[in-house]
Amino acid sequence: MQALVVEDDQKIASFVMNGLKQAGFAVDKADNGEQGLLLALSEPYDVAVVDVMLPVLDGISLIEQLRRQKVNMPVIILSAKRSVDDRIRGLQAGGDDYLVKPFAFSELLARVHALLRRANGGDSGLTKLRLGSLSMNLLSREVMREGEKLDLQSREFSLLEYLMRNGGRVVSKTMILEHVWGYSFDPQTNVVDVLVCRLRNKVDKNHAVKLIHTIRGVGYVLKET
Image 1 (cartoon, one colour):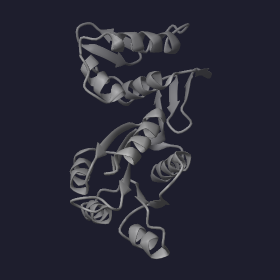
Image 2 (image 1 turned 180 degrees about the horizontal axis):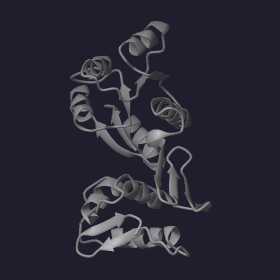
Image 3 (image 1 turned 60 degrees about the horizontal axis):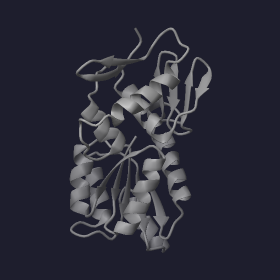
Image 4 (image 1 turned 90 degrees about the vertical axis):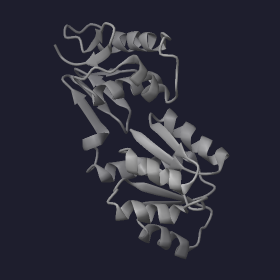
């Protein structure tokens, strides 16, 4: 799942981004409201975490512009302002939740998951992926194949999620690097091959039908054959 963090305090931004990445999200960051607005209008994020006191364009104005342009992704507002009036203003502007600083990341993550469940009608929709006998629950981070639970590490989970979201489509090593690692990486490195090999050993081991396929010279694809 993709998250957008709009926060100009670098310490808080890193705290939130690192936590979301560890929870399996692909995360983009904006340092001001204008940049956040441009990203939110150009990418289909599943959730946004937006600070109120932002340079260039404040968080409340950012949310109001998103709602006017029919962008309906869930938005959690972060703010040092704790009065009832401030909370009401944030929610009336189109925010879905309001969290006062300082906060525990565990509470932020729980609120993110609650908004995703609500946005997708419970535990269905974007919170669950399936391809043949392989299923993934993005909230519980549980992966099953033919009734057997697969024990995946964080990067293995992120890679499998990316492959499942692109089921039947070939994805290149560069695409995997950008989505799983979240930053530019030398496309000649073998980290993708190593990760795919580890994942294949867990997903396809002891199964007659193989799901992860190598397209030589192009990339990888998840499909039933």
